[in-house]
Image (cartoon, rainbow, N blue to C red; front, side):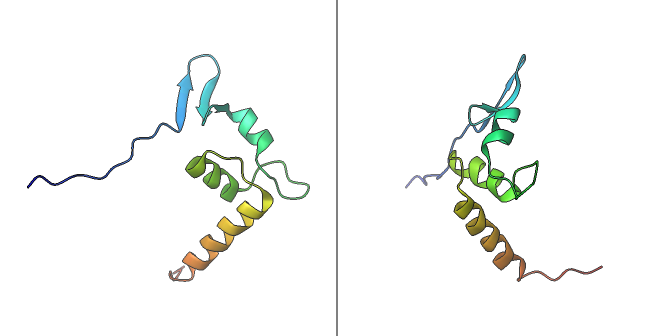
Length: 82
C-alpha cells in the first residue's frame, strides 16, 4: 500500500522587483503600519508579526497577548546557560 505524505504548500512572501518584499500581500511599510505596537512604540510586537505570518490575519492586541503568553509558557521548558 502506498504511503501518503501530508504536507502544506504556502506562499507567505513575494519579492517584487519594484516594491520589495510583500508578506501576505502587504509591503513592509504596510505591515509595520497595520500590526499592533507597544504604547509609544514605533515597531510592532514580534508576536503580532508571527501571528500574521501564520494566519494571514492582522492580529488584535488580544491575539498578540495570547501568542506572547504561549511563547512565555514554552520558554519555561528551557534553561538558559550564560
